[in-house]
Structure formats: structure tokens, C-alpha cells
Image (cartoon, rainbow, N blue to C red; front, side, top):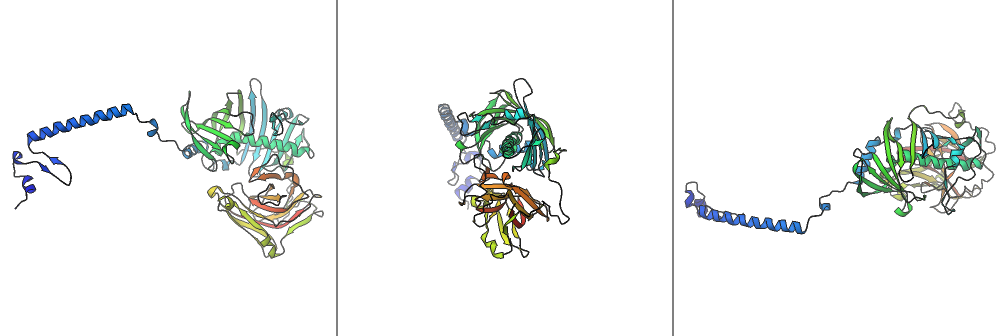
Length: 500
């Protein structure tokens, strides 16, 4: 026996015999009678028309904001797009040698010309210009009202050439082929280094703006008459925006840097716009050959760019190769040297303490131990995760009067990486450190001499321009540092630390 619903839906019943069936589960009413079905259809159409009218009125009275459907461009996507355009991840690290002429032109005339040559593998820089052009470059003076001041005591002569280890200031300045004496040598060399850092930043800015360590935020797009809508981001260095060098970058459709607005904390100009042009490939990297500053009419032109080609340096740039057969570098008579540290007592290892990037959230690791042969061994692993990238070790606090000496002499055996020697003249943990870098050779002993004039004052890895020279009569501690994004395992063995 069939139930009423089964009978109503039975295929055997004729269409006019089937009643209206309502489903409690679906809420759907099925109309089988044609007249009644037509009435339901008319009512439904009327109801839909009313709903549409209400929707149209509501939309016209309260239009939806465009932002509701606008999906912001992610800063990381823009940074990656720009990095890909200029060569991709790791491209800058493939630049072994670099040579270029940097010209600053305002209006008519040739402008100022500065010639650069950089051997990255040896860490050596050569900078050349006329003394007149060098004197026309202003310097920053925080004690002066106008801030930017003409270069003090311009060098007398025709041609200036400076060769030094980068980024340390262990080098010599030559005027018309004659080397300068101290303190003039260090004074001019510091000004040279300041110009080098500025001009290299102009050349490789896209790589720096793509760094994951750069703090950046998205900015609203702008409309350019040539490129149309440009998306961009604002990136800044420093503890806070108001005390930082801030760059705003706008990218073209392929990821090229089209326009940049920058505000430098050491600048009279609150904001300066630069238009980037003439992008070309030079080996593994793509470089813009010209930057135009519309407000001032200045043009920054990079000429004669050579990447990974033969770079010529003065013979006086390098020390003579006097390595003994054992692999040790002979630095001459050391009879006047005094021993500051040796490592003949294993208990001394406990007095040295490691300071790694874990203090700022990194994960690099290091250890210091005394070997069975009586040397100090500093080893570990540098990681770039969590914005890290350094490991260091410091000697116990003491008092070393080295005022009668010219510098520090190390006998070390490394792994081919670059290390720094740090000297502290302040007993506080978070204080200024004076640092000088040195190269190592794989499994080879060498003697390295670092003159006190080559030590650069730093704070949290940043070079200070207003710190006094190192007080060699009041050195409290020594230390070794591996940084500069040298990721991976490291090993530095130290036989002795002397003053010469």
C-alpha cells in the first residue's frame, strides 16, 4: 500500500490529478495544477522585481567604495620584481671586479669626474679624480649652521689617487704620485671613503632596496605621464623614520626602478627626486647609466662601466709577496713587538666570551677554545636567518697602554674568509668598537699588521663619522668578528696577538 506522497508522485497518475506537494525538508513547493502554478509564477516574478528595485536604490544611495575591491600590491612582491630585473638573487655577489667613471654634471660643461676601480675578491679600492673636483665636493659638518660645507683644506696638486682596503681605511693617498703623510693621509682617506660609499649606493641602490633587512611599507600609486600608474614602496634604515635615510621607489612594468624620492638625514634637501634611465646589462647585473634630478637639473652619469673585466691598480697598492715556503707572510723584523695575548694556558679560553647575533634575535653560533698546540680557536656557523649574520668573541677586560706602538700584529690561520679585529676603549658592553679587517688564507699561517690609523669607529655595525680616533693608551679589550653576510661555517685559529 502506497503512502499519499508516493501516490502523488507516481508516474501512473495523470498531470491534472497530481496535487500540490510541499516538502518540509527542502521548503520547496511543487505546483502540479497549471492554473495555480501560473499564479505562483506571477507572484514570484513580482517579488523578484521588488528585490531588484530595492537593490538598485540601495546601490545608488550608498555606492560601494573602490577600496573594497582593490587588493594592495605587496611590498615583498615589488622588491622581488625589482631584484629580478637587475639580476636576481645573488647577482651582486657575482661581481668580482668593478670599474666605472662617475660624473656629476649641472648645466653645460663636462662636470665633476670620479674614477672607481674595485677588486672585491681582494677587498681593494682605487679612487682617482682631479684635486680641483675633489675640493668641490662638500662635506657634512654637524657643528656648522649650513650643514654642508666646502671641503676643508683641499689638497694642493693636480691629481689625487687613493688606494685602500675596503671598507677599512688601511691605505694611502697620492697627490701627483707622492704619498701623503699622517695625519693628512687619514683625513683625506676618510673623505674618499665617504664619496665611495655614496657613489656605490647610487649604482647598486636596487639591490639594497631589495634587501629583506630593509623595513618598507607600501605607498599609494602615482601616475606618470610616460609610464602611467606606478606602484612603489617606502624603505628606510635606522631606529625610526625621523632619524633614517628614507627612499621611496616607484617601479615600471618590468620591475625597473623608474623614479626614486629620497630624504637623507644628513642633507639640506628634505626630498630629492631622481629619474632612472638607460638600463643595460653588464655581466651578471643590470645597471642604470643615468640618474636625472629634475629639481636641480643635475645629472649623475655612470660611464665606462666594466664588470668582471681586467682592473688595473697601482703597483704600490699591494704588499710584495714575501710569503715563506711554510705559507707564513714575512712582515719583517718584529723585535720591537710585545705580546698582548698568547694561548699557552687552556684555562684562558674561559675568560673569552662569545657575542653572536642572538642578542638581536639571530641564530648564529660560535665557540672559543684552546687547542692542544697552544692556539686560540674561534669557530662556528653564521646564519642570516631572523636578520642575523655575525659572530664574535671578546677578550677579558684589562688595561693595555699601547701608545708607544703603531698597531696590532696577528699571527692567524683561517679559512679564506674575511675577519675583523675589534678594540674597545669603553668598559660598557654596548659601546663604540674600533675595527679593522684582514684577509685569511685557507689552512695557511700568515702574519697581519693592522696600524691603529686603519681602525674605524663603529656602533652596532655602523661606521661613525663623529667619533674620536682610538685612544691607543687605554685599550680595554680585543675581539674577533666575522660578519658581512659570510654565511656558513667559519674557522679562525690565532697563535698570538702583539703590538708592534
